[in-house]
Amino acid sequence: MTSILTNSGAMVALQTLSSVNNDLEMTQNEVSTGKKVGNAKDNAAVWAISKTMESDIAGFTAIQEALDVGEATVAVASAGAEQIVDVLKEMKQLAVSAQSENVDHDTIEADMAKKAEQIESIISASQFNGANLLTDDVDGAGATSLGVLASLDRVGPSGTPTASEITVATVNFKDNIDLATSLTTITDAATATSALADIEAFLTTAIAGAAQLGADASRLEDQGEFVSKLTDAMKLGVSAMTDANMEEASARLKALQTQQQLAVQSLSIANSAPETLQQLFR
Image (cartoon, rainbow, N blue to C red):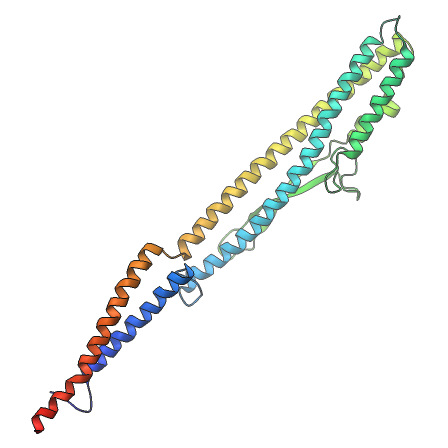
């Protein structure tokens, strides 16, 4: 039956065209933005997860910066410690040579004093951004260690993230290698022997401290590499959830454009169908 009041064919064609237009609009948005989930209405669950992960990515980016600063601080202290070891080795050579009776002990002592001053200067200068791991006071506020932000731990999708630190203790060369008060003054072969024993003890302390700082530097470097890889993996995860497959979207866009053209033709045919009734009244 054909009705001039209700055109069921046009209604079906109009619904089809409306559906195709909606799909076409979504696909065009995917192609233009590169996102299949660009806002909460696209997919609320995926959008919520992606935003949580993006906030964690921002946190890990800040952690990476903190690790870089911490690694630089330890690297400066480590370089200073290694230089102190070298200077102490030179002082050891002087102390050994001073054990001979026919040497100028005054000249050797003067040279030892200069090298002691050099060590004090290295200790004072081995700071980065105001933090010095070779002194008793790391930050000028009484701290005996350096805390470096290292990770952001979350338990459960809605859990509160907890920051964790890597603690780097000071080696405190300022007190442990106190040449000004603890080093025997060389005046003869006997005092040279005592000075050699003092320097040997300082050298052992310096080597242990340099090794400790080297281990801390290696740990910070490893953590930095881990955080970098973790951040990259999280970015890839968010991308997989929210980014559009451009090849697929392009093919779908072309197909929907064809469907739109056909739907428009169908609607036109359905709208023209009642016109055939006019022939019955001629």
